[in-house]
Image 1 (tube, rainbow, N blue to C red):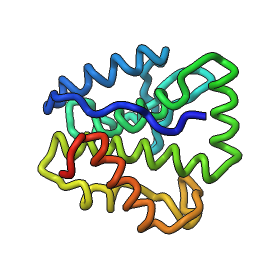
Image 2 (tube, rainbow, N blue to C red):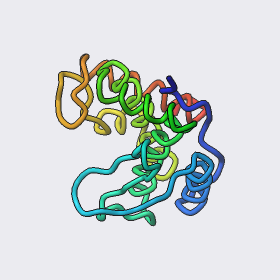
Image 3 (cartoon, rainbow, N blue to C red):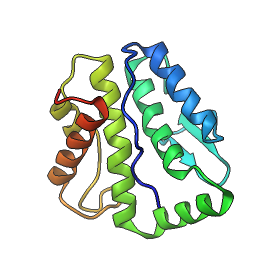
Image 4 (tube, one colour):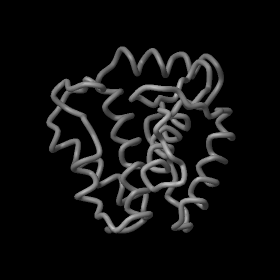
Length: 163
């Protein structure tokens, strides 16, 4: 099952350019966008909705980075109905798979934040996630520092350089 999204971040270094690029990928995967109240955002492989928390502002770097995180999940999940169902079940049942999926999505968050702000990969990777040691919301195994290193390494690949 797919955890990695084979792509690099495109040249547009502005919010609108990245929003349009991410929107195309979301549509190609067959997903639609919605908002809801609450603190969590998610990509649902069954309904093919990306649901962003209502505080997400897609005119800001943080909003676009959140969208990039969820679009990474939509791209991981894209495929026929049986694949999306299997992906969702494995995500819920297998913490190692969930960790790999979240590392990828967090790396996309970091890459977008680096592109749109003056932050560095290492600094943003360190504050991007709650992975490792069975912490909410992801409940994934492993050392948080190791997850930070993995996120940073993948973000550099997505950016196509060693920023």
